[in-house]
Length: 85
Image 1: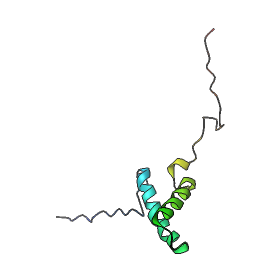
Image 2: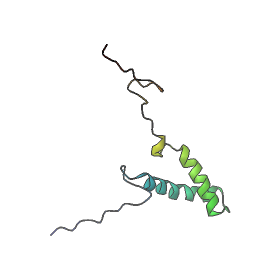
Image 3: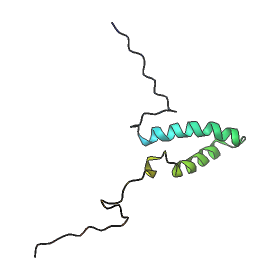
Image 4: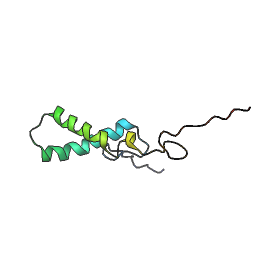
C-alpha cells in the first residue's frame, strides 16, 4: 500500500488557477511582513489599506492582466456589420 504525501498548499504560494481572493491573500501575507519591517508602528488597518492600494496596481492582480482589446489589437475598434442589400 502506498501512502500519499500530504499536499501542501500554502497561502504564500497559491496554484496558478486559484481564485483572485486566494491570490490577494497570498499577496497580502507576503507584503504585510515587508511593510511591517519598513513602516513599524502603523495600525493593522493602515497596513491593509497600503497593501490594497499596491494590489490595485500590481501585475499579480488578475484584473491588471493585459488582454487584447479586439482581434486587431486596437482599443476602441468597432465591428462593421455587413447587411445584404
